[in-house]
Image: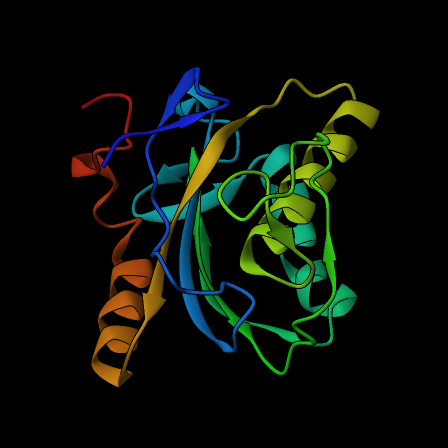
Length: 180
C-alpha cells in the first residue's frame, strides 16, 4: 500500500499496523549511519574496535535503561555503520502522548510519537549521540529511519541473539559492509 505524507511525499510503512509500539515486549532494532559510512567501529580478526563515535554510541545505548525505568536492554552490538540491539519495554502508561520534535502533525498516521514508545526511545538515543558528537566536533549522521522487529517467542529471541553475536564474524559478507 502506498501512502503519502501531506499528500506529497511517498512513504514506506515499515511498522506493523494495529500494533502500539509502547506496549510491553521485546523489540529487535537496527539503526544505520547515513550512507552506511563506517563511523562507529572497525572489525579486525572478527573483533570490534570502537571509534570515539562508537564509544559515544555505547555510552548512550546503555543510558537508555538508566533514563527510562520501563526499558531494559538485552544483547546489542555496535558494528562499523550500524547497531543491532534488543530493547525490552515493560509496564507503560499508555495515555501520555506528545508531539514529535519536528512539530509534525500528531494524527495517528503521521508524526505520532507516543511517550515511552520504541520510536521515542530510538529518537532520544539517536539525538543524544548526535548532540555529543556535535559538542566534540565529530562529523556523524544517522540514517533517517530504523528497522524494527517485534520478538514473538523464545525461538525468535534465540535466533536474533545468535545473529547479533555472529555479526562481526559475518562482516565480510554483510550487506551493510560498503565493500560489498
